[in-house]
Image (tube, rainbow, N blue to C red; front, top):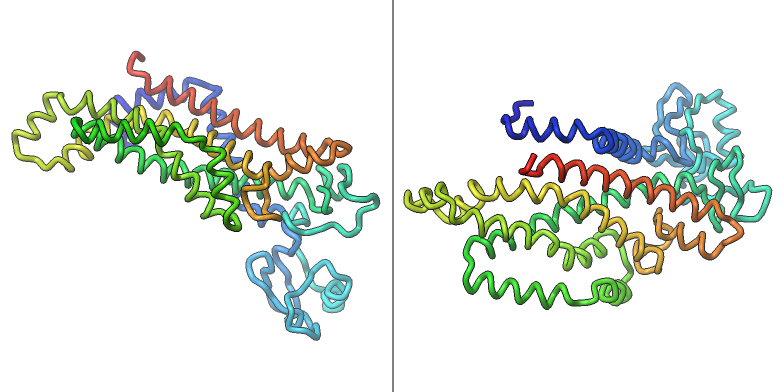
Length: 339
C-alpha cells in the first residue's frame, strides 16, 4: 500500500492506539462472520450428497422430488419424511453450526416459548420459539449494512451541500444555512415515526426516510473546510489558470476536507444503528419477523420473565456501538493536525 508520508503518519498514530486498532479488527471480524450468516445459522443443510449428486440447499431451493419425494414443493429438511428419504439413500448431510435460521421455529421445545438457554438454543428462544442466537447474528448484519448504506449516502449528500455552501459563499451559503436551521429544528424521531406509519416499512423505505435528515451532520464540517480552503494560495492560482470551479472544489479542496469528514463517519454509524434500533423497538422499523435487535429488546420488555432476550440484544448493541466509538476516537486522534 503506497501511502504519502502524512497518511503513513496518520496510519501509524491510529495503529498506536491499541484500543481503536483492535476494535477495528474485532468489528471487521464480527461483520465478516455476519455476512456469512447463512453458513453459520441455517435451518437448511449447507451440503447434501444424495444419490451421486451434490446439492446446496443453503444457496438454492430444491423440491421434494429431487430427493425422491412426491410433491414439487420446497423440501423441509427437518421433517421426518425428508429425513427418511435421505437416510434410505445413505445421503451425507452437512448442517450449519446453528441449525436454525432467524425465522425458523423450534417445535421441539420442552417448555413454552420463550424458552431459556439450552444445548439446542444456546441463547434461548423468543416468544415465538425462534432461536435468539440466530436472530442476533442476522440482526447484527442488517443493522451494520443499514448503517453503512445510510452513512455512505448521507456523507455524499452532506459533502456536496457543504462544499457548495463553503465554496460559493454569499447568498448560496446564506440560503443553505437558513434551510439547515429550519430542517434541523424539526423533531426528527417523531417525523420518522409518522412517515413510517403511512406504509409497510422495509429496508429501503426506512433508508430513504432517515436519509432525509441524516445528511445534515457533515454539512457544517465540510462547509468550514471549504470556507477556509477557498482563500488559500493554490486555489487562487488554480482560478488564475482558468480551472473550472468543479475541478477546484473536488480535486483540490475536497481531499483536505475529507480528513475531518472521515473522523465523523464511525459516529454517524452509531447514530444510524441507534435510530434503527429505536424505530424497531417502537414497532415502526423493519417489517414484522425481520431479524431486528430493536424488536428483540421489545420482546425482552414484554417478557420480563425471560431476561435472556433483553440481555442478548443489549450485549450485542453495547459491543457494536462501543467498538465503533473506539474506532471513531482513534481516527479522530490520528487525524488531529496538532499531532
